[in-house]
Amino acid sequence: MKPSPLRRLLTQRAAKPEHANALALIAAIDAGGIPLHPAKVNQIARELGLEVSREAAVEDTIARIRARLVA
Image (cartoon, rainbow, N blue to C red):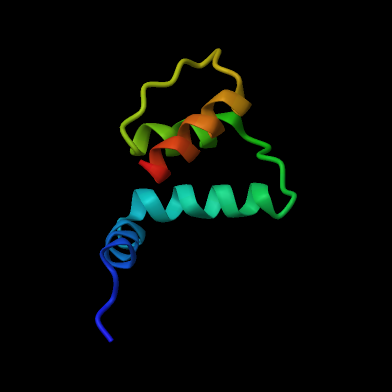
């Protein structure tokens, strides 16, 4: 059976290290984890091409990361 276009897209994105880091962060948060280092969250967001201020709330940055992974 041929994989669907969505499955191929997800596989391609998961193969990129910056997406793998973001997916791991989101999975950890969804499992009940709390990011202890806002700088690490900001670094992952920047790897995805997002501009992030040092003063940005971690929750807002995580929401932006989630939106980027979906888009």
